[in-house]
Image 1 (cartoon, one colour):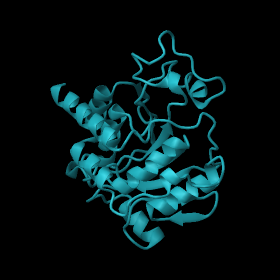
Image 2 (spheres, helix red, strand yellow):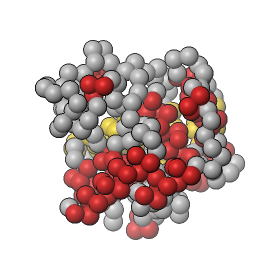
Image 3 (cartoon, one colour):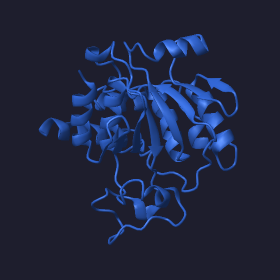
Image 4 (cartoon, helix red, strand yellow):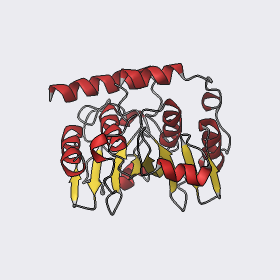
Length: 259
């Protein structure tokens, strides 16, 4: 438990280093008809840029983890795109396949944003992402390399599902492990939609019973998440497991898929 709390602190510091991006998002996302497919790995600063925008747009995407040393999906990226570079986005709605984080970000805003234009804040990243690199280092570089114990293990029959938002320190721990275990999953973003959502689930800025924004994405997700707005929340359709609490999720994933 002490080790897990250290990981939480590192993840918190990592989120702070990124300036709070990846916390808030629109309550009324323009979800694509066909699922976006993102090939990436948790520790990459360039992938992190894309995930922050996915949180802002509150999109659900299929994640195919491609940690260094991974065998399952890195070869798919090489085959489809011609090179090993991450992130790599496949959008079957538009027919686009994109490398380069800025190109992906522009694509996401163009097709799934409110105005079709990339806001200045997300169009002028430095060529070298010093802050994001620092965030990765502060997070112990988790999610960068494959867990060598499972290199030849086949992916589960059905994708896991994770409810999360990019800057959540507890979710970051789970996403890092999913990356290291090369477990594909459906990422359901649960971005904070307004100031009343701010703060941890047990102590939000607005006191009293939590009431989500009417007709917002969170309101629609609440019944799916057992009436509890808390992340991370993991569903494994392969075993029927449904659980909150990052420490418990980590324990489960290691036991079920880490050998």
